Image (cartoon, rainbow, N blue to C red; front, side):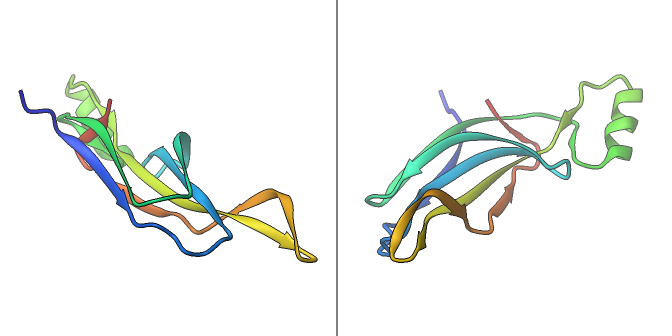
Length: 114
């Protein structure tokens, strides 16, 4: 049968400082996130994440409470967050820690990552 997926595609990066991409799953408007996976630098790639449609998925407190009081099963809206990790160079040498670019946020609306 049909299995819906959230799809992330990326192109190869030429910058030697780029070490990879961190893909996070977050709860929209709460700032709670967890690392889903890390994609090391390399060729172009493709990532598929299984998703499921859920009713009563919101990010606003008032809507969540309204649906909860009406006895619905509620869900906090999720978002995929992608950030590029780069090497830190000091004095011409690569340091032992990394920097992350400003992340891009992709809200999933009524869809939840399984």
